[in-house]
Image (cartoon, rainbow over all chains, first blue to last red; front, top):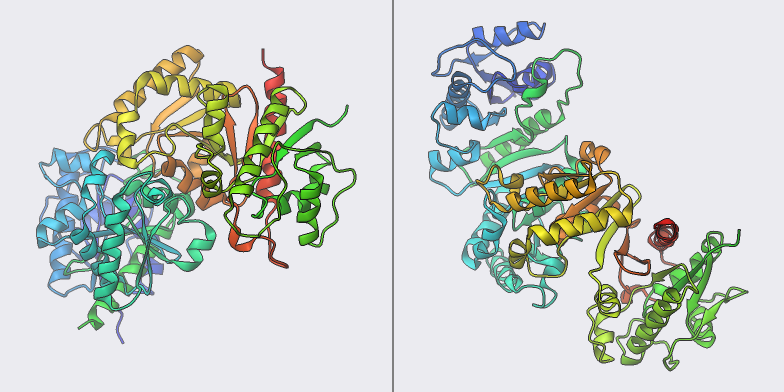
Length: 314
Length: 314
C-alpha cells in the first residue's frame, strides 16, 4: 500500500514553521508523502538560511503568490499574502483528493491583515470556504478538548449556551472523532451547584439528554464540574471533553500537554490539523536553539488517522 | 524551641476527615503539637470504628456541641452542628493565641444546612466572624492560585472586574504571601487580543500598574494570556498567580496538583488552611482503601509557614 499524501501549507516563511517542516521531514516521510505548497526557490532560500539541504525528492506545488526575500521575524504583507496563498492552494489540493488531509504551519495574523486578508485565522477561513460550522478541537492522544465557543469575550459565553446548537455540536463531535464517551463540562463553578452558582447547567443537561437520545447510548456525560474535570482520575474516564469556552478547556490542556498538542478542524469536508503554536518570530532562523517537533509530528499523525476514519465512514 | 500548637477542627465526623487526622498524627506531631477540637469520646468512637488506637497523649478541647453516634456517609443535623462547633471553637482558640494557626477538616454543606447554619462554608463564615475580605488561595509549594472572584455564576464575573478592588486584592495578596512576583491573569481568551475579544484587560492593566506603583516595584505581571499562563515555561517564572475567577485558576491547578493542593484563607487576623477535598462520604470508614494524606500534611505545613511569617510582620 502506498503512503498517503499529506498537503502541507508552509505558513509565514518569516517564522519558525517551515524550519520545523524541514527538520521533521525524514520522520514525516515514514508516515506519508508530504506535499509542500511552496515554490522550490522559496524552500531553498529558507533551507540555505538554516544551513540545511532541501530534501530529495522534494514534492511541492507552487502557490499563487510571488516569491519574496525572507526577513526572519518580520511582519510583512508579502509574507502574509504568500502564507495565505499556500494555505488556499493546500485546501484546494485536499478538496480535489490530491492529498488525504491538510497540515497547516502557523501564519501571522498581522501579516494577513497587512496583506488585506480579512480572516482571523485558518479556522475562520475554512468556515467561509466551506460554509460549514467547523469544530475546533485541541489536544493529543492522551486528552482532546473541543470548544463549543471559541474566540469571543468571556461575557458573551453564557448567552451562547443554547440547547439546539449544543446538541448538534455534541453529535457532530462524536461522529467526527468516533469517541466512545465524551465528558461535557458545565459552565459555572461547581457546575452551578444545583442552580445556586448559575443555571446554564440546566440547558447543558437538556442538550446532553437529547444528544444521548439521538445517539441511542450514554455517549455524553455531564455537566462535569469544570475544575475537577481534568484531574488524573477523571482523565482515566474521559479522553474527549467538550468545553463551553476557550480557556475552560485550553488552560488545563496546555498546563498538561503544551508541546504535544495539535489543533484539529472537524466537521468539514476535508481533514485539517495544525501545530498548536504560533510563528515564534522571536526565535525564527536562530542557530542552535532547541526546537520541538512534537506538535508538528502529532498533527501529521492526527491528520492521517482522521482521514483514514473519514474515508471509512458511510 | 517548643513546637507550635496547631488547632485542628475535625470536620464532619461522618466523613473521611478525622480518619486522615488520625492516620497522619505521628507525622504531624513531628512538625507541631496538634490540638484537636473534639470530645475524647467522639475521637475514641471514630478510632474504634477504624480499628485504630487513639494517640497518647491526645491533646484536645471539647467543642460546644453534643456528642452523637457516628453514621458513616450520612448527612445529619447533629454531625453538621458538631462540625460547626468544632470549627468555631478552633477559630476562638487561634484568635486567643492558644494555637498559632487553624487547620480545618472538611465539613458537609448540606449537614450545615440541616443544622440551620447559614454559611456556605468555612471561608464564608470567617469573613463574617472577622468582618474582613478573606482571600481564598489554593495550591501547593509548586503553584499557588489566589481567586479574585469565587463562588459566583460565570456571567457575574466580568462585572466584578473593578480597578480599586483588584488593586487592593493584589497588594493584600502580596503582603500575605510575601511573593516576589505574582502573575495576574487576563479575563478573556488571548487576554482580549488588544480589545478584539473583550476589554476588561484594560481595567486589569490599570490595577496592575497602580499596584506596582504602590508596591514600588514590578511585583505584578500581566494581564497574562489565561490558557498559556500555566504552561511549564510560565510556571518557571511564576509560583503565585491571581486568577479572575474560580475555574480559571482551579482547573489548571487541579489538573496538575490535585492531591497535594491545600486551601488557604489569607488577609484575616488568624491563619487558616484546609485540605482541598470534601468529606468523601462514599468512602468514609471503609477498610483497606487508599487514602492520601498529602493534602492534609501540606495544609499543616502551609499553616505553620504562614503563621511564622505573620508573627514576623510589623
